[in-house]
Amino acid sequence: MVEKIVISACAAALFLMWLKMRQLKRDIYTFTEQLEQCLDEMSSGKDIGHFSEYKDSLWEKIYEKLWDLERIWQRQNRKNGEEKQRIKELISDISHQTKTPLANIKMYLEILEREEGSQEKREEFLEKLKGQTEKLDFLLQSMVKMSRLETGIIEIHVREANLFTTLAGALAAIVPKAEQKQISLYVECPERLIVWHDRKWTEEAVFNLLDNAVKYTEPGGKIHVTASKQEFFTKISVKDTGKGIAVDRQAQIFGRFYREPEVHDAEGVGVGLYLARKILTMQKGYIEVVSENGKGADFQMYLPNEET
Image 1 (spheres, rainbow, N blue to C red):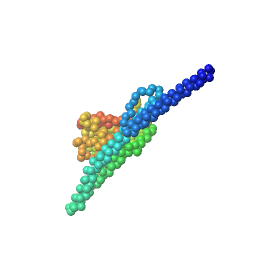
Image 2 (cartoon, rainbow, N blue to C red):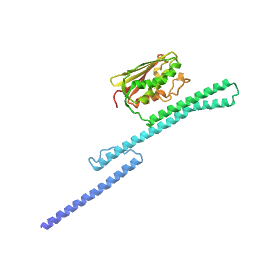
Image 3 (cartoon, one colour):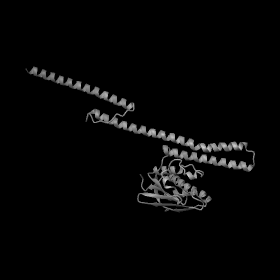
Image 4 (cartoon, rainbow, N blue to C red):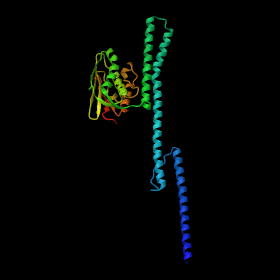
């Protein structure tokens, strides 16, 4: 009797084991099919979606990881797509912006080749040729800086540095142009003002603002540069007595290659303000403008007081 009970118990145990093995086999098949289907959808670019079936199961844990991975891939794909679009736009911009000076250079060379006039006439065309060459050189240098900043080839290195020294470097570079137009420069900045910033690129940004101010300020005008430490940011202001900027255009002036309609004959290619904003943004700062038509412009740069 006892032997029969033992045999029955063993048979029941074996049957239960067989059922568990069968269920396990079925679960494994189901798991592999789901995993294969999920991977196929991911590889074909389909969205696998997000659902809450099979709570607390192995499949749910694996699925959550795959879902997270898909989000990462999608973000990276979007980033790559945006990067390709930026490069495409940059190439298009380079092509568009270089056409005019190159065409002018070619034209002046052709005129010089067939010019049989006076030496004075030749010198006039040589001067124009030199001007177009310098414009092309400036344009290409600006584009190199812009593309390096945009693609991360050049990194911003923020550290504690004397802001007075940074401003002095930018002002020294603009003095010759200001003197040519008899524009007065005024500076107010504490000599020991220490601010977190990249000295080289911040100097570049300030110079671009000063260059714009000199360019669009009438001879005999004034430019005031001030720097002051506020609660969260250090403010650098470049204020001129120039032509000013219409309110409805102030959102456009920081765009790449933007130039005011009235000043297309003036020197420049329209990347200075774009670069200045890019440099400030990469230092966790920002730039804004306060201006009205005919009342000058005040470009205000803000750098964080603490490392971010």
